[in-house]
Image (cartoon, rainbow, N blue to C red):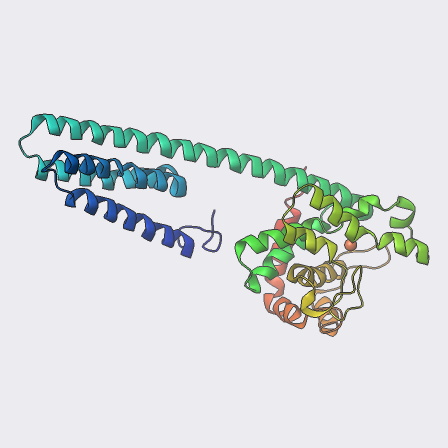
Length: 326
Ligand SMILES: [Fe+2]
């Protein structure tokens, strides 16, 4: 179900398109009604203006699918019929001509609307198949390192929730959510002996481990993922105070998606069971994160996280875990 921010029925972009479409319909009908038919040249121009009636029907189909094209056709065909009645009250041939145009307008409106609806349906199916493939991949990667395959799904869900709270638009939320989902994809290049080692890593092993953000970035750039998502992957281990890696970025030089991710990843780590400790409570996790504001974490992101509330986070966690492919 589209939300207002996603371009749903109440979104600014939806309303803007309706205004543009109504303006286009008004301009075309005004032009058509205003051009006289006294001379042959004027009549040719008049007919050309009438052909423009198909334009808003096509635009409505592209923007709003079959429902939009039928509505635009209803408006334009009514204006066409009115014009025929007013302008050609007793000309049977001209009325037949106008009737043929009327019928053609409806056929075009229905066919073009159906085609755009079908295209949208196919694109939705492709998007769902793509999402299922990516979700399956990250769940498999999570299982290699964690007991369950839901860590990446949870951090994506938390990132989406927090990015909405911080006012990111729908396209950016989608990109940073994808970055959160794929944050550790570069760990595919880390050998099991290092990734799954129970004791402390040697400095050489740490160096290998620290390669995973750049490795993930390179993988994702090759598959054409949105740049903002790939940048989140590259910078997901940066710290607000500049003591992170791989580039040692600090403050707002760290992409906002990575600053959001840092907070939600810490929250997820704290509130999930680990082999060496149990899960801490929401209150304890929040307290730990608050203590890291301004050093490990962006204070604005921490403040937004505090505002979310435990109930919303719990709900988001349950929804995320239900997405795991079976
Ligand atoms: Fe990582």
